Image 1 (tube, rainbow, N blue to C red):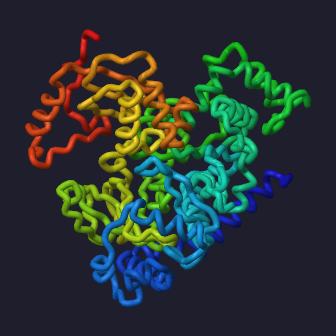
Image 2: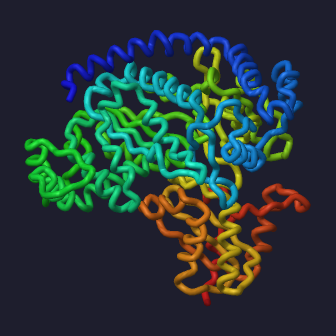
Length: 545
């Protein structure tokens, strides 16, 4: 065990080195984003010119962004899926000149998940991001890394493909990419992530967290995850303390640290006074919480803020996804995030243009403050003009580079706790429900309520039995592993079904036309956020079976 003082001295040394080698050059690059982005695109095209995709689109002939945009249409994952799968199976350079080491698993728009290639250079890019991110945090929040780090992430290895190649979670890859000195500060054992049962896993997570008195920073992609952990810790406080006591005396086994005698006494004294248990008396050294503060993550921020000391910083994690690292927080005091312009080539489509089906993209230096854009990326791991279906807003400028904030997933997809549910999942689940009950449902809409953390399915049909919601959730879970995980862990509340009167479909269509949609182009979104749907379904609730 490295002494605490030596660990912190090593962290300071690594941060000084990160400042010189990573931060200072990045600050210089932010002064000339157009030039930096042009080089990134040039390097990607040169590196991937001999791949099947590169030859088909004549990468060697492309001379800059104008040629690139004309040569390649905007892509979705389904456009690239076959090349990704074929490269893995046949080990031929279809999309990448380098064979993937592993894959990031994430939800897809169809029933099949997406496998995002993770190359050696991808891992280096993640390490570079973590050096920038942790350096900014180290400089902004005094003492942030003085204590232990409670990082709640997914496993780096979740399973293996038939080819033997592993796949895992991007949060696990990002945790593994932390600077070496910070790795020594992690207080969650790797073995804990191998637990499949989510209730048991969260129980052990709560135990690990409570066992450590000197937590100085918490990191969790979604604030709902940390709030869930706190709830479990409070609800099962006496059982957690009993488990830690048994573990300390050698009477219990499991992936848990052994708490100090002083910490164990402190926790035992709190038993019976759970209503007085707070973040401040559990972890008085907590200096910051790093999490998503935009999009659906913003819903949990007020509740989290109320539980924290006023001196504890809330730090935006940045715009991150399985496909790429979209932004880095360069000023944790004000949570300003800039695109990772030196790693990924970015294009942005104004929201109004995309919604009007005129997807004319602009580059990073052309972004306008206050405007919202859909994100298109070209990455070094084989995603070319890849449509992220993410909406960001330009919030200002840092040096000469725009700052961006994540707003929400685009149309046809919702994401409250990381489940990334797509409209396709809903239509397939409804098709399965109709087959099971031998019914026909002409009109239905599912709304996501981030405040309540649940989905409501409105359908124009008489009431079914009490198992209908269960069957819908089962179908969604079979297609979307992340939905299943979030339901099993309790981060998503159970689905609600509301039956509607006959004629609701026509009333809904009339409402959409009144809102300005053209009748010939009217599209009913089967999956939406509740805040984006102005139709009052409650007026049409069926009162009789």
